[in-house]
Amino acid sequence: EAGVTQFPSHSVIEKGQTVTLRCDPISGHDNLYWYRRVMGKEIKFLLHFVKESKQDESGMPNNRFLAERTGGTYSTLKVQPAELEDSGVYFCASSQVAGGYGYTFGSGTRLTVV
Amino acid sequence: GQNIDQPTEMTATEGAIVQINCTYQTSGFNGLFWYQQHAGEAPTFLSYNVLDGLEEKGRFSSFLSRSKGYSYLLLKELQMKDSASYLCAVNRGSQGNLIFGKGTKLSVKP
Image (tube, rainbow over all chains, first blue to last red; front, side):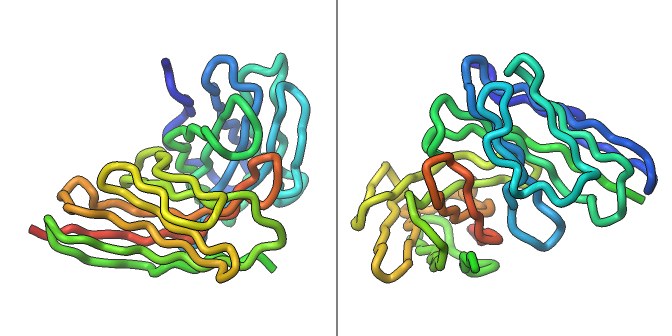
């Protein structure tokens, strides 16, 4: 079974530019989560999709962040325009059922805004 | 507020036993997870506790006391490959949105 795939693995962009991160969950997993780890801090929840619907987006920092999951398969997270404080590692996770048990994480995208 | 505390770093010797503690204060509790994360890799699931007591899985065991807001991860017969960060995370509700601690970086020395 293929795991959760994220790309790119690394991205370096200038402040003010746009970046789109992609997550391919495990096939058949309806639940998809985005998390972020800023340097020196803990991993923090961003949002949760159930199929193509946003179940909870309470962790999204501001309206510069836009997440989509068209068709309920892969998801994208766009940051526009990027700011220096957006630097960090963005993780995606998927699960067959909600509730946390059976989460599989991707390896993350390391975003550096300069 | 939501708070999960765990030691920042620990060092142990190959073959020994190490206990990593985690205390939490969260609004809502629906299980506690331990993940292992090697540098640059995905966090991988180690254990899940939702009821009080000890869960054993091979060399790894995890304990939970809900009344004390306390958990620990016990690693036995340490191996060099156990050098990694260990993340404590609480599931507050039914949807699986986890709150993480900052992680404990464990270094295993020969």
